Amino acid sequence: MEHMSSYERISNILQRKPVDRIGVFEHFWSDTQREWEARGWIKPDCDFVDLFDFDLDLAGWFNMVADLDFEPVVVEETEETVLTRDGNGALLRRHKLHASTPEHVDFVVKDRTAWEEKIKPLLKPDRRRINFESYRQKKKKCQEKQRFFCWSGTNVFELMHPVCGHENMLVGMALDPDWVRDMVNTFSDLIIALQEILFAEEGKPDGIFYYEDMGFKGRPFMSPAMYDEIIKPGHKKTINYNKSLGLPVIMHSCGMVEKLLPGMIDAGIDCLQVIEVKAGMDLVKLYRQYGDRISFFGGMDVRELYSNDLQRVDRELASKIPIVMQNYGYILHSDHSIPYTVNFDTYKHFRDYGLELGTYR
Image 1 (spheres, rainbow, N blue to C red):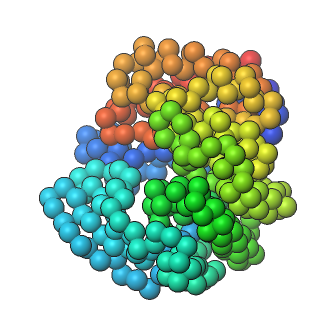
Image 2: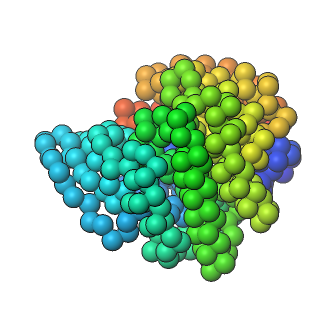
């Protein structure tokens, strides 16, 4: 097959139509960019998408904090961490020395009453929630480079836990499901309202990339029945809106979400990302079960890259790519993000050998 543009390639991969090669994209921790710059491996402010000639790029993340006027307050600070109260009334502890997910310390919202009084009235489609300029610039650049451009942002699950924490949210799903349904409905409506504003003014993207971390090691945060009854209606609403615009939907989820996947497919996703091996996800197994219905994006064990042993990296790629590329529906990516412990040459080899294996002949 003749060489395709990145836009053509990703468009076809998301529909499992013939392509010249698999796609490629990657997420990197911010620490990685700093470490690689310090070692002289990349130039300052390097754009990884350009450097590695990735097939897609992302922009558009909405500011979904409840109180847009609230200035975050530092409650406690040490040499290594900072504890901050944010506009959701949440106390979150973050590391200062390296990138990581924040530690949940406390939340003002623990139940339906606090949600209804303190958060829900503030969740309005305010234009300040939208970074028009970032979206505009990235969309223009992708058009010039013939790259596939995704609006990216969080969906309902990832918007609820910053407000009330995973524990309160999950207990609420069991003891007061109508409260959590109300949060799902409120956030799904807000997502759509903000996308309507953005797309009307700046034009549609080529696709949608939703972040929804619905699992941890070995199991999802909820049962498939709870997903179907409480979370999936919000997914269906937002996905149906985007499908009405002709936009394919990629959904990211860290953790073990295998048991939720039938419901996610029913909700309308076109592609699952990131397929975390260390949480128990198995790319080849999922491909064999669902490869005729959705595309896959990721699933390469980043621990093999940690080793900086190219033979281990090669074995990981060779054990999976020849299988999952068969239906034309695969995009190369690690099973999480690339940390600073991975050498530049190791990642470059991963990308190059992955695309060599993933070229259709």
